[in-house]
Length: 258
Ligand SMILES: [Zn+2]
Image: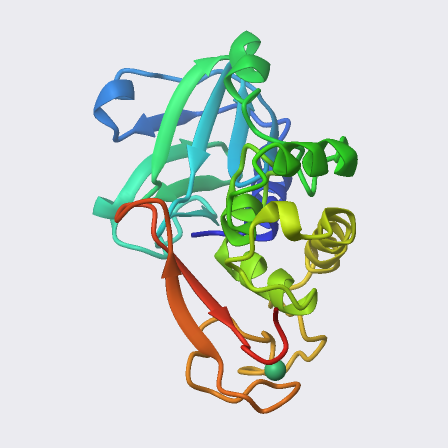
């Protein structure tokens, strides 16, 4: 799953390439929107909201979510695409750029007037101008029995954290990912979430350790069986979830996290 900082960066790249331009052709290779034609419309802006990407074009919004394998790439007109054409779900072309959404997990087009309501379920956006830590804490605290890893990843509580940040934040705060949210000091945890994702907002490679070297950027994520960078204890790996569909990988140091 993507992290909010990646989606933020994608939105900024798309906004730089498209904002203010008039769409020459659009191609929605998604059955429900195959007839949508945005040609002649102006791209107003491209923004992220948590892990969601919103392209405001004319009086409509193209809403997408990258899910597992999705990405948006910007090409120059006539340039060879970075991925095979059959993986393209949406193509937006202007005189200066061709934006292609590959393997998007979700695509929908709706009237601009519906944007606020459609995304109202999301919690405060960690990278948004209206980030609200108090509200995020309130939402997490409302379900005190939820494991903290699930609570942090729940986009209705706060929007923007994927599984990497969830695991890294639990390590940084010395909290087991399975600990019930009600037993966790939420204010410093949410504060740290905001600081760590903002610190990575403009970086090419995400790091939570402060180390930029490949293979040394994360504390626990995807490091099952390897030694803890702080104490040398073997990092544990497990699965957490309410059911088989919502399983989430968790990693933790049994010595550093309680
Ligand atoms: Zn440790």
